[in-house]
Amino acid sequence: MPYAAAPTAPATDPLAGAVSLGSADELRELLGTPHPIVIDKVHDRLTDDDLDLLARSPFCTLATSDADGNCDATPRGDTPGFTHVLDRGTIALPDRPGNRRADSFHNILANPRVGLLYLIPGAMDVLRVNGRARLLTDAPFFDAMTLKGLRPKLALVVEIDEIFRHCPASLKRSGVWAPQTWAGAEARAGGE
Image (cartoon, rainbow, N blue to C red; front, side, top):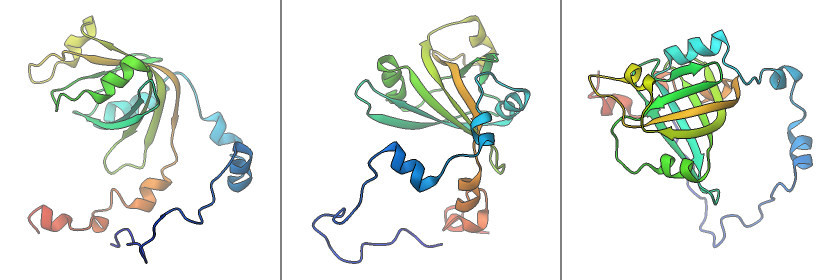
């Protein structure tokens, strides 16, 4: 599998000659108008299909930004169904022991807007959730998020603003679930 191309010649400014996009109108002219079905699939309450995907997903990424707009994206994972559904408009993610940096949590304290992207290994389903988050140090539902006898110390609660199934084209193009595309995977796994 090819790796990112190396620069062909040293340059003093790697963006010399670049043309920046200047407006939303230019963007729409370049990409075209989205099909109505793409717009209509956005909703603000979990559907039965969404609930099924959450029940099967062991992984998501959490995107946050601080008060100045500095962004962070962090992986979150646990056993399938680790996202606790409080109701069709609210979900909770348990915090499990990690590196203790808590970058996402610091960001949420300054800016509650979050984005979540749920994946299921091997499946082409992608669920996007955008909403407003807060951190809880306790709630009755913490007991239901206990894993291996450890009750979470924190939970991230997200009130959903919008949710939808995302186009799986990037997963297909990247081959992320196709082992034959994993450069060097055999060497890292000890070979076969």
